[in-house]
Image 1: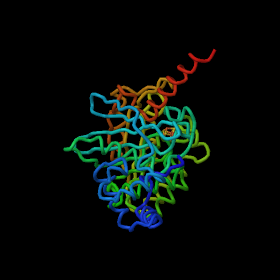
Image 2: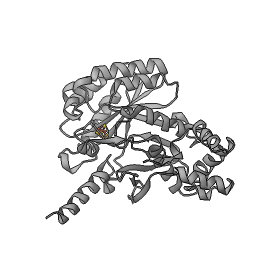
Image 3: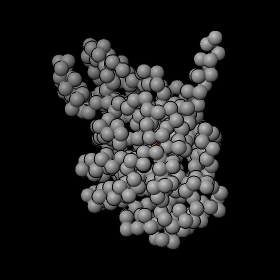
Image 4: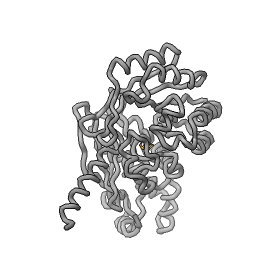
Length: 355
Ligand code: SF4
């Protein structure tokens, strides 16, 4: 982690690096074009830079800091990337294909402190925040992996970690992903998802960006929410909803509420009625997602009849509902599952050598 990677730099920062090395500022744009347009991963390949300058750069900086250890693919063409960081930690990002929409779901932290009761990422706690570069690299790895007739259209911060708990690095990464000299993905195609960090939502509202906000609600009231999202005990669902209203009043951007349906926990008719009451008057859409079960938690997705009933009840109240398909069941696509599996594998391996 000592050698800085250029994937985490803004154009202005890279220009300052060039000048500090006695090179003209325009070299920065040339470098970024190699990285973001041509998918190059080393200074050596940047053939329009003088050889000496390339050598000088590689002594102090690197292009990428992480590498991909494995890519797992499902029958529905979802692909999960296991990304190995310079400090030996691993994270995941996921490539999702839905018609012309090609989305990468990125991680923002190594582990997560939120400990949601249905999520593999929360099981091992928080290790550290990802740097802006480590976030951008996930997008680049997926982009570079696409075939020539595919185009990356969307980026969602919905992988491992709570993005608003790593606010500065996430915002810097979002700016690089959005920048014309960076990945050039429109702000309206970038979504930041939060469990409901109210200060972070307020800050985001003031950024003046057109980024989408998704709030992982998962419950219609405090009793159910605190059961599955422990951090709700401090915040309270009404404070999250009030902040969502403020966000809409400031940005005039619709909000998405994510709602993972868990059998016997939050998926009854009464839950749907309470949820409709809770969200009354908010300009929003609700993304319903049947649970991707994690072995450790013993929760499961409801039956198809229950999912349909939940969906129709919300629609009867005039809410806009999208039912998301479970994706990548056969590759442990729920957030953090692959990382958890690798951790368990390494622990078992260690046991073999400890007498
Ligand atoms: S669902 Fe999101 S916020 Fe909750 S533990 Fe998992 S990664 Fe963290």
